Image 1 (tube, rainbow, N blue to C red):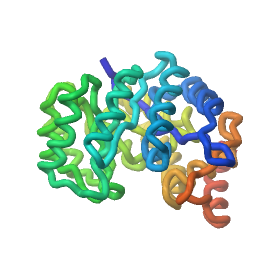
Image 2 (tube, rainbow, N blue to C red):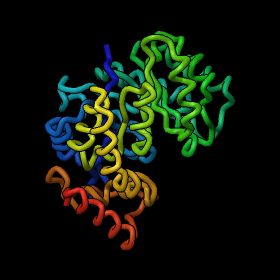
Image 3 (cartoon, rainbow, N blue to C red):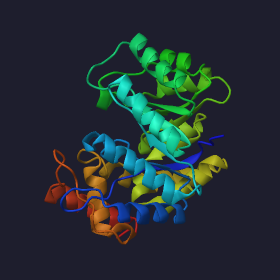
Length: 296
């Protein structure tokens, strides 16, 4: 059974100059993350640039990460789409490939009602057997998954968690307070992880863990163990990184940081259009924060 606890990294995707996926570097990055203490891997999310992957690339990326991890840590594969049919196809692939769970973003752009969201996620849960992690990020999708909707979906045996990135702490508290046994909340916003976990959340699906996996692992270990004072200090130490990684659209700043660091010995950290590299001014901000944390 999936244990969704700790620091799960929302993997950035190594890409070559021609913007093809660098499969060799993906494998290298998986090993690096596990060696640094990351508790789980999340390929093909927003941070992995799934929006500009073909379906074949998306499936291939899931396959590579599962194969390279080889059971060492849990894999939660991003399989969301604004089409229920497409999301089902990707989710079935992740299930057959051996993913431990599927992270499914709420449909974006077409803005379904709360009834539509319940229908979408229930269809996916009914037609697969893989544990489903709901993903609420209304700043991206244009539609909030309300607490009452989450709690209704949480009644389904296959719906095991939600990645909450609404930024609405009141809503998150209502979910945690009303959740059935076995349903957990994880942070989808590094800056709010301390608060969410102090309220009863169990982990984070983190952008910052790409470039600071050991620091995020330590932070989450302290939260899990109830060492809140140590974790509070780590939170404020990491806060400038959490902020600077969103100085432009994610994953632009994160990939720029990876380039500056030659992260995991990998140089192919290019972005796919329409995302472009960070400005000179913002690159300097990223560089300064990395130096403050002794990451550069």
